[in-house]
Image (tube, rainbow, N blue to C red):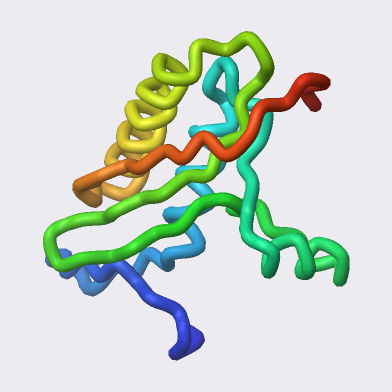
Length: 124
């Protein structure tokens, strides 16, 4: 395992389970993209440069912070034009939290949703 990645560590009877931040971010991104009204997740300028260089980033627009007592998630969302953004953001929070908790067993402390744009011509 690479030393520069953060892992959520769960000590189990048969040994240790390490779940990388990248895995948690991918779960969050997939759950968020499936919510009605979400057009896309948008990342930082660094993500845009990585995309130009051909690096695929499935979890673009999602940041994960691992803490001793749980996970904090931040999602940058581009909404579809006409979507009720507050309701959509609440649905993103619920979907992301539920997906992470059910797939990893980790407690989600907070899901911040930043509506960073509106897509007039949605991609999906």
